[in-house]
Structure formats: C-alpha cells, structure tokens
Length: 265
Length: 192
Image (cartoon, rainbow over all chains, first blue to last red):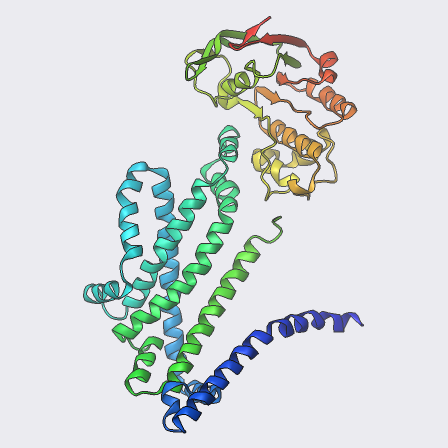
C-alpha cells in the first residue's frame, strides 16, 4: 500500500466502523413507518410516522428556501450566546462559592432552585420580563449555568492541595495559579460541563423558541409544523436541530482537544 | 548565619518544636539527621512559612527561601523545561539548560513527568527548587531514588551555591560534603 492510499484508508475505516448503527436505526424507522402504513392501509400514516424518504424530501424543500438558513443561523446564534453566557456565569459563580463560605451559603440554594425549577415556568417568566427574541438565549444560559457551576465546583474542590501549596511556596502569581494549576486540573470538569451544557442549551433554547415564537427561529418553525400538521417537516426540523447540536458539540470537543494538545493522559 | 530563634510549633496538643534555634554556615550544605518523625520536615516547612508559628522568630523571611518538598509535586501537564521556566524570573529564563545540566537531565527537556523515572523526577523537582531565587534552600530528601554516585556529583554542585543549603537526608553520600552536620532528636525537635 502506498503512503497516499494509507492517508485516506484510516478515515475510511473509521467511517465504515461508525456506519452500522445509523443504518440499523434507519432500517428500524423504515420498518416502523411501513408497519404504521400497513396498519392504517395508507390512510394518514404520514401524520403518525412518515417514511425517512418523505422527511428527506421535506428537508430538501426546506433547504431550498432562503428563510431556512435565516432560521437556522439565528437559532444557532441564540444558543451559542446562551451557552457562552451560562458557561462564563457558571464558572464565575463556582469560583466565588468555592472561595467564600458566605457566597456559598447565599448563592448555592438559588442556583439549586434554578436547576430544579421547570424550564417551562422560566420560559413564561422570562417572556414577561424581556422581549421574546431574548428569551431563548436567556433560558439556554439559565439551564447551562447550574450544570457548569456544579461540575466546576466539584473540580475546584478536587484540585490537589499539595500542588496549591507548591504554588504558594513557589510564589506563583494569580495568573500562574489559574493557567498552570487550576485550568489543567479542571480540564475533565471543564470539558464535561461544556458538552453537557451544549446539549442542554439546544434543548432549552429550542423549547423556548417553540413557546415564545420569535422570528426568525427554528423553534417557531417546529411550532408551525405542529399547527399545520406537517409531520415530515417536524421530523426535518428536529433532524436539523439534532445535527446542529452534534456539530456544535463536535466543534467544542475539537477546540478543547487543540487546547490540551500534547498533554499526557 | 542565624536561621531561627526560639521557635515553638504545635499540631493541636502535640508539641513539635519548642524553643528551637538554629544557625548554619553562610554557604555550603548543612545536613540535618535524626530519626523519622522527629520534626525535621516540620522545621523545613516552618522555615518556608508553610506552618504557622506559636512562638519565636525566623531570621530569613519565608519569601526568600525555596523548599523542595518530600514529594516531587511536578505539574503533570508541563514538560521538564517548562517546569523550570515556570518558576524562573523572566530575565533568567535562559538558565533552563544550565539547571537541567546541574540535575543531569540534559536531553530530557521535552519529556513530561510521567515519562521520567522516579529518580529523574526527583532531580527535576530539585532543579525547579534551585531555579527559584532564594537566600536559603530547604531540601527534604532530595536524593530519594537517585543513585549515590550521581547524588554525590549533584551535592558537589549544591555545595558551590551562593546561598546556604539546609538538607534533610538519610543517605550517607551527603556526610562528607556537608559543611555542618546537625544531629537531631524529638519530638519536640532538639539538637543533640
């Protein structure tokens, strides 16, 4: 085998290894849609479970409309903004509550309440307090914040006290403590919070769009498919949401890998 | 050179140091010897300002000391060269190769701690301690896991430092190179 063929052989093998699972589930979907169609004798199976090919056709139709990319781009922007805001706030609160016992006593119960409260209640409240366009980003941030706070609080408490003592004895500045001790020690917690948070930001952000109907928005389109019983379109928009969520998670993982490139373990 | 005067330190009810005073030569190695648990490590930690005093005075401010801990405490995510440049002042970053040479680690600069043997890790921790600008070096078992001939060569280099070195060791290779040997017992720590 020549070096040039070896170059693409490995990625091809990787794709082939990952192919069976989606093919299997696509087969399950196709079979289920066929069974529904057979049971209803062709009378409205598209309302209950459309065939994959119908969904693909609906997606093709949607993608040809210029508004599709506006909806997708705007929702992506809202989710990313919410994720970034929730992540930064959650990290800052984790640092604060780990550093000060008083801040911990004051803020931790409030953060736990935010985590436990139903997202729908928050969506309606935030809708009353802010404009409908801001709700998805605010809700995404509110859902991400407690997850990041919880994960990073655990991480900060788990930083090796012997290394912290070393930092003190070797007169590390605050910047060095952060970049040389805390951030590398927190790496698994930061990554876990990032990927979990990204998934939550998508779920909650799109749910907020469905309830608040901002324009343009992917969630508003999902609501309208329900309203007009356009079930293949509902599947198509859901597929787009899932694909975007996976894409964002993949990009975040890639960025995190670049950040920690060369680190052992 | 006086290091401390009438130091008293206790952990709860346990008195570890009581009215302990110590002087060392201005340069060279002072070897502290004594049974395990007598308070040698505590003395080094007190001199480094890591243990609060109940009484007494430190002649050298802790901010002007450099301590080598009993454990290596290397940062797993930094290479050997980075461990040294992390603690060196900006204007002395060029001294990394010389420090690696002092610890006989030339050629290992790009390795992470997990890729080094126990003895190499110990020598890297020693080099990092020596990278700190200090008026007093406090070394706790610096040659654990280091072969005696190599430890001897490094000790010769330590003896030539401008600042005094206070060294806790059970190894015999230190004895002929020490400017002063302090035999200790305790707790509470006392000079025999």
